[in-house]
Length: 494
Image (tube, rainbow, N blue to C red; front, side, top):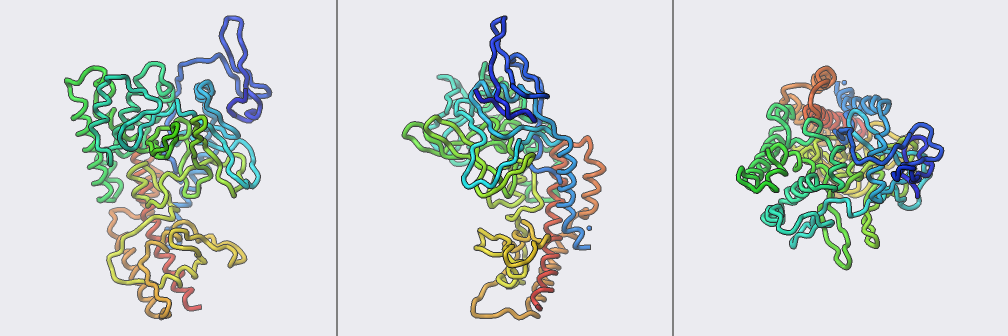
């Protein structure tokens, strides 16, 4: 039997061997550092996943402050990564989870997935993980509600809770309720896997944020939406988990904080995808163990697909890329979503999000085609990319934030009218002035935020750190827009 990869000796096969007392143990041939003991059902490590993106000075320096901070954090974190304990692999292996060429590592920000070897340029997708449907928590996205596997006993009051939810908007409540039931069901896989989910103190979900942590966002609209989500969670718990609820329901969430935690897990770790059960193909909301340990990237290396012949979820490396040993394997959680949407659902942000947005209130606009050509950006609006073939070397300034600038800056397009340099420069100056006004409206500067995160971050909650990182990324994006417009004004004259 081929085993899960673990450590530098992970390429060796793992076998079961019978012991004299009738038990079993793992034997790994050629593994120098990892010792497998007898199979155990007790998993004692409380691992937190934390932020999925690692928290990584005039106008030019400030525009790159967030990315510099992020790169430094990634380099520091890489030295602190340790392989996850063998029990994490073991409990999945005996339930037919298979992983090929990857290893799970734990660092200050939680668990991530990394390549265990170099992979040459891939002409087609390559399977790196197989996860059976039987260990997932799933519910169909539309009525009639069906669960695969069906963990809801006949007559259980939780079904009435699920049946009473809004089919269009309450998918997270249904998934959270099933997660609570799975964690409470004897011999369910999630009783073991739940030990590796982040607890209340380790979670970045802003459903668990205090009022002070919401104020640290320095984003009134986002903070208000999060307050409404917290109130929704509170009212849902009061409605379905009253003091006189039957014990088998009440014990799933004895206090509102427990339900808010489960709701945060459903939002931040839930997948929505099409799956096949027999001849039926339908959308389902799913909690998928092991796959939820993949972190986020706007340039993902991996994706998921459902293999219906044996009801397996496959995680595959996307084709057309070369993978280096130690490189992190990532998903794209929300495609074409700005930082505020990602922050609202997952509790993190990224400094180079090509879909970030900024609202402008003035009437000034710049010529779209001229702006794109200034930075060698090609493609349709939904598919912008940096055209490296037009230059001898890549422009280090152009990143995801520049692509976001091309999408969010007010522009005009007229194929029959050329732009007038003087008018373009006035419009660019007006947009710069509006960006600067937004920056001046914050109670702290970008440099102050970076110092606050570096000096006061130790001992703070992951939600506080995520809030500071979010406002750093937001201000860095505004600085990037100002610098983009500076470069644009220089280049339209030549």
